[in-house]
Image (cartoon, rainbow, N blue to C red; front, side):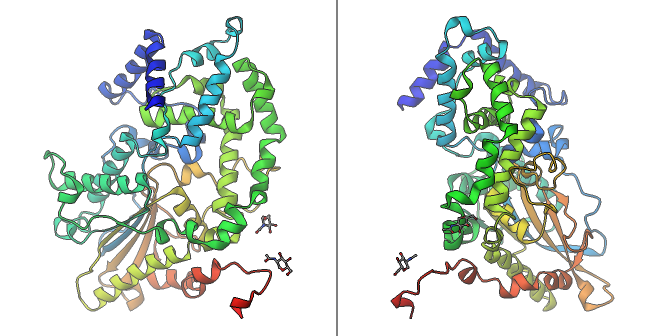
Amino acid sequence: MLAGARSHLRASVAPAAVLAAALLSSFARCSLPGRGDPAASVLSPYFGTKTRYEDVNPWLLGDPVAPRRDPELLAGTCTPVQLVALIRHGTRYPTTKQIRKLRQLQGLLETRGPGDRGSGVAAALVEWPLWYDDWMDGQLVEKGRQDMRQLALRLAALFPDLFSRENYGRLRLVTSSKHRCVDSSASFLQGLWQHYHPGLPLPDVSDMECDPPRINDKLMRFFDHCEKFLTEVERNDSALYHVEAFKTGPEMQTLLNKVATTLQVPVSSLNADLIQVAFFTCSFDLAIKGVHSPWCDVFDVEDAKVLEYLNDLKQYWKRSYGYTINSRSSCTLFQDIFLHLDKAVEQKQRSQPVSSPVILQFGHAETLLPLLSLMGYFKDREPLTAYNFKEQVHRQFRSGRIVPYAANLIFVLYHCENAKTPQEEFQVQMLLNEKVLPLAHSQETVALYEDLKNHYKDILQSCQSSKECHLSKVNITSDEL
Ligand SMILES: *[C@@H]1O[C@H](CO)[C@@H](O)[C@H](O)[C@H]1NC(C)=O
Ligand SMILES: *[C@@H]1O[C@H](CO)[C@@H](O)[C@H](O)[C@H]1NC(C)=O
């Protein structure tokens, strides 16, 4: 409460002109659709995991609920019979840790004498109200709810037979226990409700005549349940060696000097973490409020590329190819997807209705990245290290392209009439962020279900979390004998 009062106070102290400008730009966005995206920043492509979904799918800036059918999506004699979607939560607030660092940075600016306020950017920053508060701690914001409702409307329009009214009662929702994910699943349901009852007011999720989302952290937050990952990566200071080395490397040093000059503070008072938070603030102000923050003016595109790399390095070493256990810890989730697909195939073969035509699973960027890595996606020839920033400018592993807010990976199972062979009867497509994702092994846009299972048979048959995540102890203790 105290912190809340403090930020209100700060906001009210800010000159009216600044507030008016902020309000105006957010209103301008609402009242003038089609005028593009005035708050967008040249830095937007480099926000990594804090990227807006619209920056990956720019047509949504025009009409966020217009379904856009990827021409590669199967049609004709193949009908979708099941959809399994993994969905990252929508736009969220910064975490308390990020907010504290931002406050520290703001404090730094305020301690400068009045004579030091020459730079326009630095002056604008002092006036910019710090409206983030500890209670916000990573929660889903209103824009994030909207991300989910709109995604639901688009998917329902894209797969009308799967999202039919008849199937509504058979929807299966699973979510991570985190607030932002539970809230995302509820907002997605509200979007579907809007699809079925356009114009009617939104009811509570409990009144929506379908099973409420079920919390399952073993599935959606598998990384918290994998002892080997926790010990060797999460709690291991040296596992993120390249991230730490990059923070003190030459690219970052150049950036620190530049920012210190712009902000007119001693370079010794800055560090990579503070700079990164400043950069994130530009992304948060844009994603949450749709406004252009003066923090964006501190950086140019070259700076943004360095900070994007820092973010990607962390994702690479903690969630992706950096260590085998990062992706292996997601085996159970991968197998769970194929259990659903197997069941649907079996039911179709027996001419039974598919019991779960739509399965929606809500999680995190940290849920999606390991799974995509397990499947072999976005793997560069060389690892991302502290020392190859330049060589990696054209890398595939760019988290902002892969897991923006509301990112979604969808498996669509098709039943194809007139198939020449039994194998051709069942086919699969994958979509990443509503675009067809070519199969990692063949680069084709569609696979026979049997071929896909065959390609991943090692993971499907011999990757057991209990085994993968088991920590081999140095000493054999007596209770293991
Ligand atoms: C921590 O990470 C380093 C670097 O990968 C590795 O050599 C070391 O064995 C890890 N420590 C533990 C306790 O797993
Ligand atoms: C293994 O055993 C040695 C000697 O008994 C002991 O010093 C060491 O702490 C043990 N290590 C672990 C990981 O338990």
